[in-house]
Length: 228
Image 1 (cartoon, helix red, strand yellow):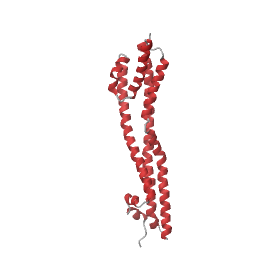
Image 2: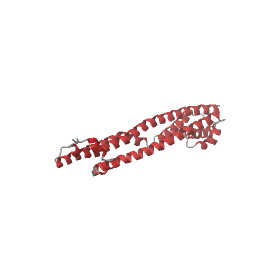
Image 3: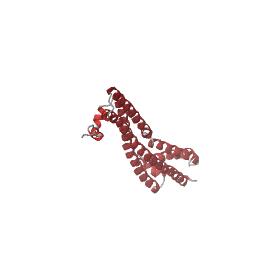
């Protein structure tokens, strides 16, 4: 006696069969989820390279800064460390030091210098955070988009079941399978985006802390080099 086995029915359908059998709205939902996923992965790999370069160049620049004879010597070699967040913060501070020396002969307004360094830190953090909002949006929104596609697909499946006048699982299983693809794609886009968003947020805080510490070192170096 042959009993109906749902597993056999599921195996008869590939993912492509499920997608191609979906209606126009579920297809549109899947396309939106695919766009979110592709853009998110592009940002993830771009940030991976950018943060790796930033960490390496920061370490090299910090060694050169601490071994240098003075701020003028660092300014000469700063271009060798691009792109480097610490080098950008140094440029902000060095320009303020240069302005004060030209107008007053020495560095007297440390408050202005500190504010200028903070501007450099803020600018670099803004660069590091660029496109991070896309990862946050993907992690938050795509599960709901996938759920919307699933609900719509299940509605279509049960409408088809009513029109067919059949109450068997064989009649409704393909439509439900089509609908669940949207949920799977929504989670597939959201999970990596959430993981890497949290990881990169930690990296940005770490690099930001390094820049804050460097700003203090720059202030100390300025006082040593230009004290009266």
